[in-house]
Length: 308
Ligand code: CP
Ligand code: NVA
Image (tube, rainbow, N blue to C red; front, side):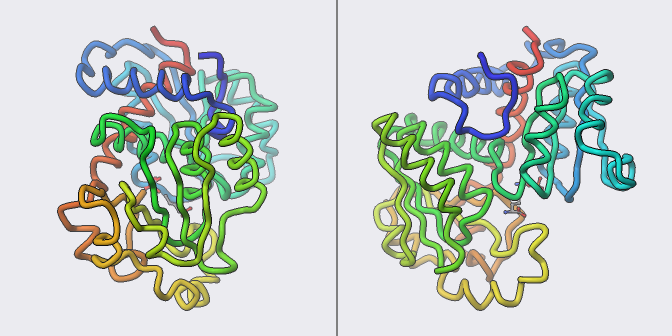
């Protein structure tokens, strides 16, 4: 793979994404075959925000590949006391073989890649969550056997997860139909770049509506995420009001394809963005998505950090 970093799926070709999926499939089937793939390699993990899945999947993933991961929370590194992201990138590059970072400002992952000399993986920024999108499309591929021609209905906030799914969908031939309330629609610049990529790739262009039932109609996946993302806590009350009618309900699932799955990146709030009957129901694949974070990221780590 010619990519050095994973900041956004925008830079990735369909073939490169498929290379990750092919390796992830092998890693999932025969994890023991890769026990030394990243022997003695180290991954620094910067977390400006909390995490359950991202931290544990990267940390366990590095261990399973024979390497190690270092958890660098904000209270334990000098960024908190004013050391620049650029200097942090330069210093960490002298010690470790890769950096994974979960940040508030997307520019921070861009700067880590710019000033460091080792691969940088975006473990969620205010704009994007590419590792999540990779795990989700891999999960859909496992279920459906192919991605081309699938319809993904995203209901809710036009946020980092929504953007990452959109940028991946146009590469993979998935029609992304988003239903978001006015004022909470996806970033117009990201939407525009996804539409441009769809034209280039000759894949369906993403569409945005304010009607969740319209988005859900005939969908193969109904996807949602929290209404209030990390860092937006002060907006929570206004958001709950704005998102009324956007909870994923059994009625919405009934509008989708009969074999449709329900997806959520997690953590989920039952009775808010999704009804408990849906997230805990038979169509829900939320824990497969979570597990697949591990397999997909191990593949990514091998491809970027230069194992076998
Ligand atoms: N989906 C996801 O990234 O979860 P965490 O915030 O727990 O890492
Ligand atoms: N949109 C959510 C995703 C959490 C994994 C957030 O940024 O908080």
